[in-house]
Length: 55
Image 1: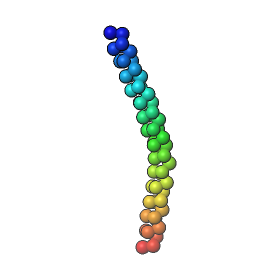
Image 2: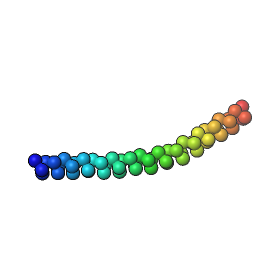
Image 3: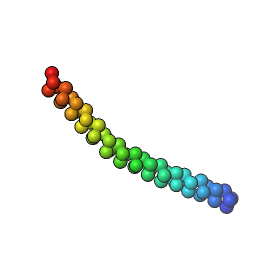
Image 4: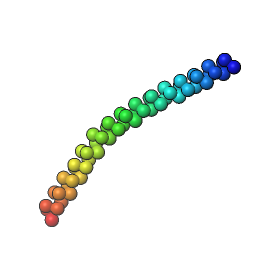
């Protein structure tokens, strides 16, 4: 019984480490997206305004 309990703890320890890695990856992607999305939207608005002025 004790070895099964240790395996159980190891399994959840590894799963916990996986979640920590996963969440840090998600956080990194979120930071990149939060920088790129406003820049992309600004470029779209710029070209839309430029197109409207030319018409």
